[in-house]
Amino acid sequence: MNSTIINIESWFIPIDILIITFTIITIVLPILFLYLILFDKRCRTIPMMLVANSCLTAFVFGCTMLSSFIIILKNDLKQIYYPDSYCIFRAYISYATCAVFNYSFVLHALYQYSLVIYPRIVYWQKRQIQILFVFKTWILGFLCPIVFLFTNEIAYNYDNQVCQLPLRFSFSVIYISFSVYGIPVTMIIFIYFKLLKYVREITKNIASINILFRARRELKMVRHIVILVTILIGVGFVYAIFIIMSFFNSLPKYHFRIAYVFGSSSFLLVIITLFQFTDPLKISLRKLINRPPNRITPIIILTKKKIDV
Image (cartoon, rainbow, N blue to C red; front, side, top):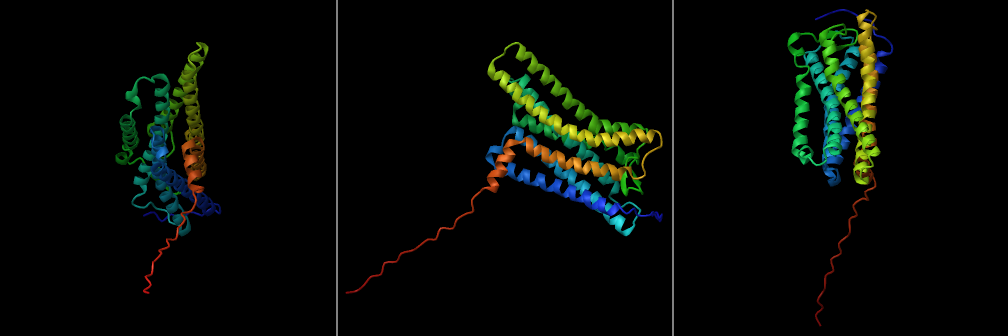
């Protein structure tokens, strides 16, 4: 147990509370969205199933990060500067669920791509196949960082009160950056430009109106995903700057705390944007809010009395 005494900065507690607030809201919103999807028959489609998967991954990732942020706040208040027994495992789960969350948007893009490019291949549009892809992304997400559980590379950072891979020029840092952020973001942008090129080609060839309309509609959906990913890039950009700075030994002392502020706010913005781009969710929520209260109709029982004459 390390007994090192570190001065508490005046901004630690307010920032901890702000991050926890953002994360709680981010957890509550996916629960609401999942409720709407489960109990509204209009939301029982494959695109909404993929949205539900994104909401579920957001919920799990949010819960993992919330537990970390609460422990950071507790340690800051009590001036505890040593890791708890689950610190490294929470870091692994956060890497894994973050990867699954990012890859969930790849599934959105791939599904829209198959609808436009291969509309006659019904096999790729089956619910069972999409569920299989969902399971594969979860397996992939949890396999990506599993090696760090056995290499002891995840370390406790006393200044930031968190277990993370130390930011420095290393294969592990580059590997986790690409597997969690780089690869899914690149795949989504690549799919978007492929669809954009396809739409431009069929526009020049004066294709049928139905095909052109469907292609543009799906392109719009992928464009929405690109916007979501752009917000995620903002989070990755902060980490990328810190990684580059670590190469020159000029890393800020509280770099993870700063990154968590950007990360938690951006994560919340992604969830809100996902809701804004999902029309069935908005319709279902509006219907839930405007639902009239159940009226209790009184039942009057008329009894007929017999009068003896």
